Length: 420
Picture (cartoon, one colour):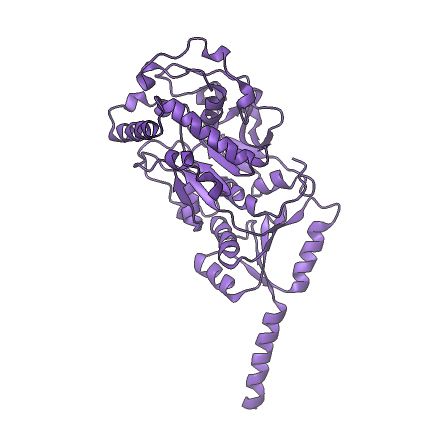
């Protein structure tokens, strides 16, 4: 009996593995760790060059991956929920999302993007949500800064994140902190790079960096920015050739007629705005919907994600995949974008309608794409300078952080003709 029984057990095991040849990663409430699930998807694409299906609007934007015991083991190690399903079950799911009357679709993810984070190399007094979540999800990235951009390194990457940064050359308008070591270090770092590349002002050097980033996006790159890296990027472009920086930042006064000279044709997302040149005011322009203007508090600050057609608008659909459609709001030096200053071609992905603001926007620029996400940290409502970084072990299912990770996977998608 033993000789007959053991081979039979082996046969059953091999047969079940042969039939169960897909790994399904749910991204609805059944998922124990949404953030690390993105890391698994990225790891499979990068380490094994294995294609997978991203099931848009199906159970929160789930993933369907070819069966591999190494993948299953790694998911167990990282605490990611998954199901082993048969090829027949996988085909049934794919048929369901392909149905003409279903607002779902399957997008092939083919190759992990090469990821760079634009960030100062000196010690930072604040953290950065994107680097936090990439580290937590175990997504590798390179850190580059002004000197790397000016030396032409951007074409080495597919996806670029702009760290919390002031591109106007006003050091974040943190003049009140001028005696703090971190402020002096960053000012010295910026001035040294400007001098190295022959710029007489940091604002001129930052403008050159912004233009290099614009070339990167126009040539087919993907750019993602949060907080004041969003509006200061466009302000710098609009102020090309115009001095909007007061003397304590660059040694000479700002042009009193600067706002009449702004060129909105240069910008990515915003138009018709005015800069705020008061050097003691931390706002850069009237684009940002400031806390006192919003009429919201931590208890009632939420924004809603738009629902897009998965089959006709796959890009915004990918960027809004989530297990929730109502996302907790969070503040930043730039928190939200007043709708009247958003260009008509820009897609609003998430909004707080009661405040007349957009929180999450996206558009095409040349052959590439950009996404701006207002606020600083999706799980820290009012993150202050010097506070401890958010521990994402406490927030493995963060809907706000998921939006960041959608953007990182987006460049891996097989290119289609896109309506957007």
